Length: 249
View 1 (cartoon, rainbow, N blue to C red):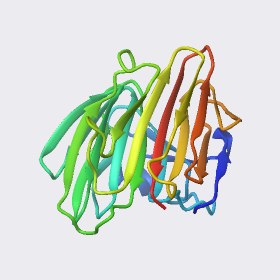
View 2: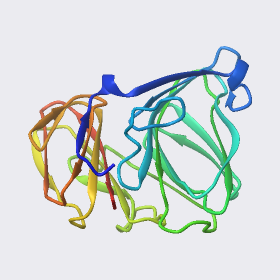
View 3: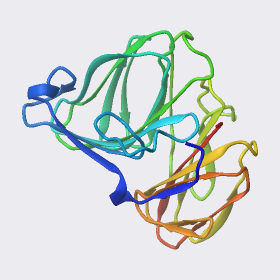
View 4: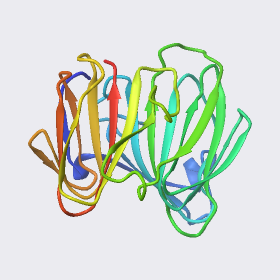
């Protein structure tokens, strides 16, 4: 779990779920609705031997297709679940008392703690694409909590922006983790320096191409790096969009 790696988009796990049959109690939606998931780490029926990266346990690139498609209300304990909407609209309902409509650029962090339920639905005809990130907390059975915010690529372009963690303006969560995003529209080189030499950094390419520590990565490729060293990110002249997750071991 603490070894560096490169994961190409085509090497990720792939699962397709229907809103009928065995999945009916969990997957919601019209009978023709489908939910597809590309997993970077072991999750559900997909088992590759890569159980996560530090405190990061799940990274799912998910597509909700068809009206009403998504996850019916279900329970979690202790996991911190973050969702980053890339396309479409997500309706999120939780037992902390929130009912939110999130569109592209919006994101949330739901700390399930001692027990929390949530529901995730696409109530429109167009597809909804979401990145789901699950993180283990530093303490178990904490009171559930929820926060949401927005990343505006137009105003935050060409710099690394903290979304989740202890930085000003980021959503606070009960874990030594930092989630950032970089949206670029020009060729540039940036350095990402972890806050601790013990930390690892997972870089996921949402769109475009980037070179991370001399390793070229394309759309939906990712890499996990340990060593606490400064990480050089090089983007090209075409638009690029990255999610960067720094985690304790």
